[in-house]
Image: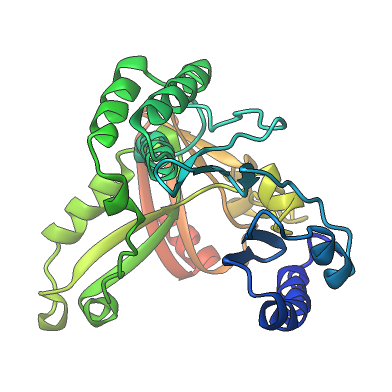
Length: 316
């Protein structure tokens, strides 16, 4: 079925078995395939029905001196004796690019336009085609609250690049050898605490490290929060969103539970701290917080035995 993990592999294998015999017998001038999309260049006297009958599947064939293949509009120029490429936009394209007020790091909103302009420059042989499709892109990105001046600068800088340079395959650097010198910390991104990366990095640099960690660098990586796309398309499981709090015991004389708060979050100088675990007076190996309701000061501690430690605090 469409959408299953194995569907592209099965489509590849199925068409590969058919195309082997077809290419050996008919030998077109040019043949290229991406999964189940095929691009063939033949002589004018080639009977197109041969392809329909040979592959024995329902093929939507677009033929002529100009046709669409994937996201390309391909034309053959008789004068220059070469192919001319430009961008092909499907009629169903809604241009629903990521909104700038989404909960994503700022570099995402810089990388999206840049990658789209590079895609257009890579696809268009002539600069006037690039200028047309890039102007159309700017128009739709502005509707999604992107900055017009910023988009224009990127469009102009990408337009100066040579198309052939963008088409060449770039070998990725082997970074595995450098992994031993780095520590990777993954955090869910939240726009309300954008400076968390700088805070952690500064703290890591300032702490006294053992000899083994002196040359180690900390790499902080933000992960996007779960979205509806993750949930419905990628079968992503949402985190448990149930509220967690301190649960009082049934003993009316318990002095520990008498002073406890049953909130699922704490308000510390207008900073909301969520409670991430359920607990009670018998909890072991705990981090606790004492709040003075008069002066609005607080103390954070840790203990192996919560009830024993709190009893000691109350006695003091």
